[in-house]
Amino acid sequence: MTRRQKAIAFFVALCVLLVAGAISLNIGWIVITAERARLRVLVFGIITFGLIIAGLIVYTVFLVLEIRRNEEHDTFINAVTHELKTPIASIRLYLETLQSRTLNDDQRRGFYDVMLADTERLHRTVDHVLKAGMTSQKPKVIARAPVDMSALARECVELALARHHLQSDAIVLESHDEGPLMVRGDAEELRTVVTNLLDNAVKYSADVVRVTVAVAAPSPDAVWVRVHDRGVGIPRKQLKRIFRRFYRVQVRGFKQVKGTGLGLYIVRSIARAHGGRVFAQSEGEGRGATFTLELPRLVA
Image 1 (tube, rainbow, N blue to C red):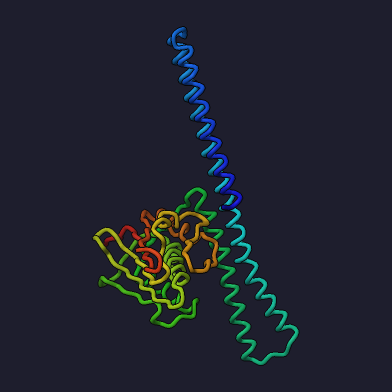
Image 2 (image 1 turned 60 degrees about the horizontal axis):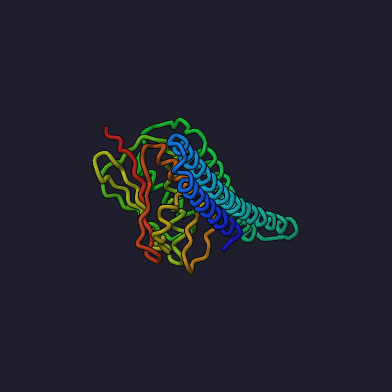
């Protein structure tokens, strides 16, 4: 049990004891004074007592939530610090090597590729932090335009294959409808959603990456983009929590995945801003997971 968990348990136990003590005192006072107390005084005392108990419970709830929020912030800061520090240290090391040693063209090209990959990792981390900050503020006005989700999904698949250095059959794109599946929204924001879902599917695929992306219209007024992986899966108790800020799936026997814990939170925020939703399904640990993005369909 961590330090903050002990603090939460202490305050909850304290609240229970105080409420129990207050109820006992109030019942005793009613029994002792019931015969000689006036009805108005008795009613006033009961109401006042109820307000005190409610205030005590509300105070304890807010205190526990604040402790949890501080714990989430600390976890986020540690994750972001690691995500920023690691690529910076790597880039610096390669630059110092380039400066101090004489290398051939192949070695230099390899160094440049590694530094570009580290730079892309830095960019993704900063982009996630900025987007999470924007979504937590007032909703912005989305520049809506027709977007072909089939074409957008194809672009995201090609980008994920290149970014994670995967074979062409590692991520398979399926389209179950002829013609374009159009929605109205911000193409860049929707690209962020699909990219984040694909990154998560690859990260949680363990050793062998087998991801399927399906674009379909389950009804005349909806478009689905479904990302299915055959990875470590999601425990059922965590399915409702994975879209929270800073939350990362914890699976037994699987090492903690690097990241800020903001990807799925950003996905849900963008989906809601477009009038849609996103939900996850999993049969449990070791059985993979399926994420479905549902958006209103634009019908000509």
